[in-house]
Length: 162
Image 1 (cartoon, rainbow, N blue to C red):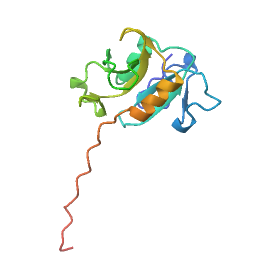
Image 2: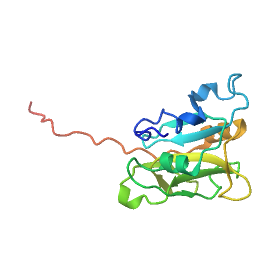
Image 3: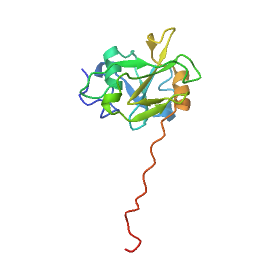
Image 4: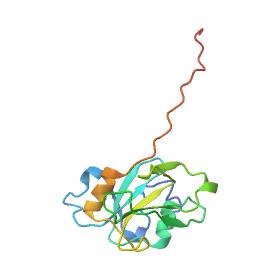
């Protein structure tokens, strides 16, 4: 049911049965996607991908998105203070230490989030998850904080005498 290499190819939908579709952020809210709910995935390469889908993701699909291929994943929902809309939440892998995941996002209070990050909406509980509406998807696109990428080290190995 799930692509074997979903995390190596983040442009694929989570589930073939969901009929999800990745869209270009410039098309967000245009006539072909006016009321379709969204979810947003921030990849380890810090690419912000927006998807539309008519159905909410299952627990297994969320685990597959935030985990890494071939390893069991549990996820945690971070508090909802990272966006201007408190109903927008960040979901990430709960067990990042032994997996060696790269930093991808920063929280408003300076924390670092590692690995692929899923962004969804919530109702009254952090565990009552929903897909994003158009307004929320736009807020995420504007306000998501990517972790600064390390600057490439300058190569001083070339000799001045060459």
